[in-house]
Length: 257
Image (tube, rainbow, N blue to C red):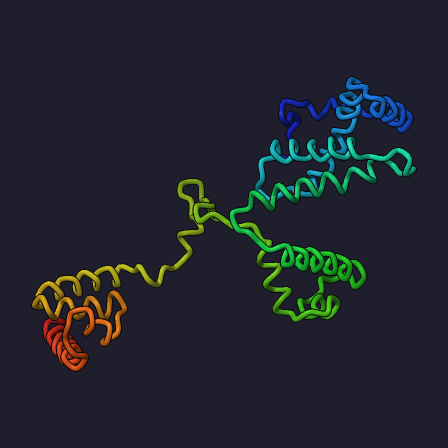
């Protein structure tokens, strides 16, 4: 998707490229309120947006959406750029565009992660890249944690938190005739066939208890009430509840055998 020619109806293969002189001349006109110059300047910097969104390739995001968000960042850069600072426009614009895209990704992520966790995660990624370049091999979590002065558990939690969620419907294998999905490899230890059959058996047994036994078992083991709470609710003593409970359990054991 990142290499497609047309993005948001724009043919990226034919995007104009402005010289530094043209940029400076247009910026002056823009400051004087020239809307045509502003439009030309935006078009002349769309390649900059395209180069920035390349960094976010592989996240599963729609490339058209990222491009539009990047253009918003570009426009904000134009509106806030101070020509008196004597810096290249791209030097100022790139962080603005990246920030806009990151805000978009953060706000559209179904899992909300706190700013402090994200910040530590990004710092950890920077340290990992730095140490990899220095040592020509990827550092361990312990090395990253030592460099940042935090516990290694914090690094693991933060890096896990910024991982994009994966759909259970995502295919992991295809032999040409049948696909294997992530959900096929996830074991559900709770809702097994055996558990389903056992639940049916218990349900059938409960039907054979008398009304008072059924009520006691339901409140104690399905609603999680204490014996005291059950006693107060139905107006008998805790000792009576205890006796009824034991009687019901013995009845169930006999039926279950």
